[in-house]
Amino acid sequence: MMSRLARLRGDCRHDGPHRRIRQGAGFTLLELLVVMVIIGLLAGLVAPQYFNQIGKSNVKIAKAQIDSLGKALDQYRLDVGQYPTTEEGLDALFTRPQNEPRWSGPYLKKAVPPDPWNRPYVYRSPGEHGEYDLYTLGRTGQPGGTGEDVAITSW
Image 1: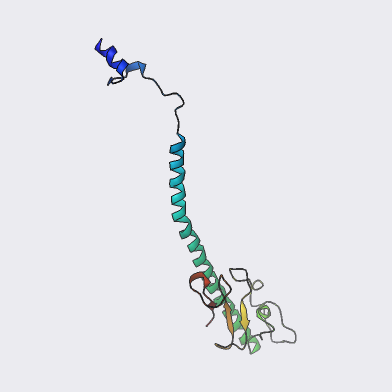
Image 2: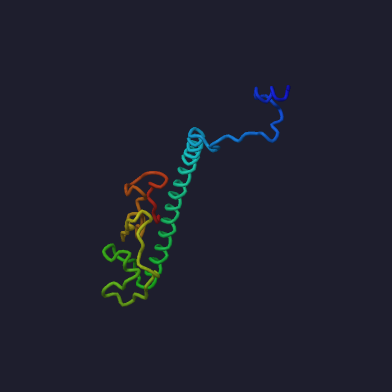
């Protein structure tokens, strides 16, 4: 009798074979919203770090490309006796300039690539900082800046 009374009140410690399964078992809307908020917060913390790494990678790529172009310019000068003029530009590393019999290029395997922000590198010869200036103005395309916005130069 006591067992039957306890079962009716719902405080029986042993459910036995008559245990009921809740109809429509699953997640409530509130539980789903909480999970979505947690995922959103995690994405908000991870995404800036990820995009910051992309910016740092672009700066490293620009430095490596400027270094590679500088080596090609030095090889051009060894063969021709001078760096390409500003008018000839970096294209002289891949395509023979007119009236240049000593050109032994191409000095690059492919045409000059744009910088990582899809703008052409700036080349001047003679330069203000050396025999030539080779640089990119970074993500913004404006002088100055820090991080991904900094100008990356050959000097």
